[in-house]
Image 1 (cartoon, rainbow, N blue to C red):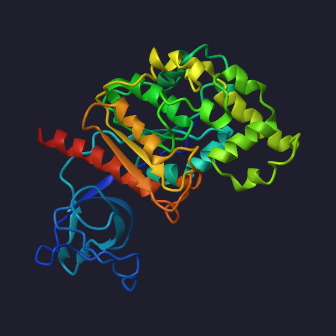
Image 2: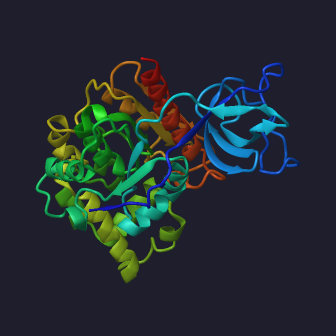
Image 3: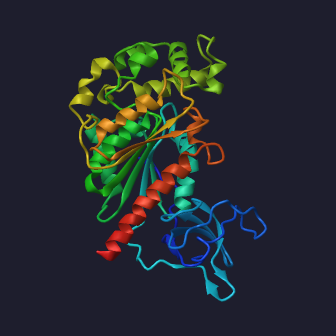
Length: 363
């Protein structure tokens, strides 16, 4: 039913910065070596950090609280003086990150696309699970969206005390919303990237059809043309004038049809009742939502203005929008050398998780 990257064996290790009080914090360097470039900011005294990698007295961290670089290398001990010490709070449960990949991909391709996030999340001590789309082969016998979400919840098992965070890219955001709502209080936050909210019809604008049945009737070439007009793809671009399409590209378009031609998702205006009456309906919800948009989206695509519509899906004050600069729709999921999505999501997730851990320890 799902794809699970191997879970990290150890519990996350959190440290508190106790050094540098008279200097505004401790020095942070870009690399492990003491001669690697020093970052402009110091890591503030009192900050909580998650240990990612250690080598002697050197520690690569991710900041959970306080001020300074979100990640880098610091020295834990200078001569006889401790600069960082283990945090006093006991870690109760590791965070669980539940992910859904973009449309148009097989499960193997989807897992690969999510790897920049899932790999770093595992390294930070998160458990990770990745699920396929409603309508994909593994869920083809699900009669409706409720069947799909129930199967995933059953697979997740006993989540008592487990802090869950749900992330999705593009088309995966629909399944993510349904599952996040089904998780109830176990879901601490929903992260939606590069997808308009469910109550904004997509088929009408991208393919000029209003229903799943109409989408199924489109030729592979027409499907491809609509797709690249909204969400540019250099690989597919070279086939836009071929009709019929080469078999591998036709197969890819069939995957798109399989995932998008689902009346239960209400993606077209003729099927909007599926959104208005089901788990994809807008309305107040206690779970915070962080929506992420690519700055270089095309007008037909998932612009920041469209993505901001997710505000209708949570309660007042629980919504935030982050625009990731210098990337388009698909490049949004690139590694952190090209896209800021992974640092934004992972830092926010771990800070939310750590605040809960710290609050539980003092209550």
